[in-house]
Length: 201
Image (tube, rainbow, N blue to C red):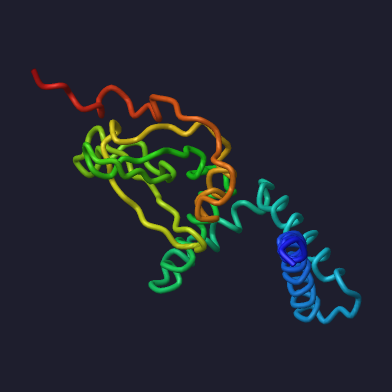
């Protein structure tokens, strides 16, 4: 009976992620096909990918860049629209854009001398504009969530994680269930000589 239960649980572990993945993919394909009113399964998703790729190509073109800049300028002048548009743009740009922010995973010691550690990503290497030399901002994603929080810590409170950002994010989101990524090294970031805290004798 114990062996049977063991096999059953192993079957769930193997089949559940596969079933959930297939279900999510089918739902995405079906939803997009419904939006485009295309009866052939998967074609709507393919068309969407092609259109997005084409738009990305046009966005890099010299001829269309001026038009897109004009549209962006108008959106940034509208009160509520500006908030939604700029926040969404900055978030996507941080993950997949040219100005990626989530590519410096670090281990944070939130309390000096404490034993608690958190894993996050450096998003700003210099806070001189806020009058905080020697500090950085770190985004701390939450497990099993798309939310997170931003903390400001001194550079000596962080340690670089020598691992791929995607692996680190997967480790955090999974609640630490996945294999711990990479190794730890120092120093984490170069914030410049002018922003380093001076040692007091």
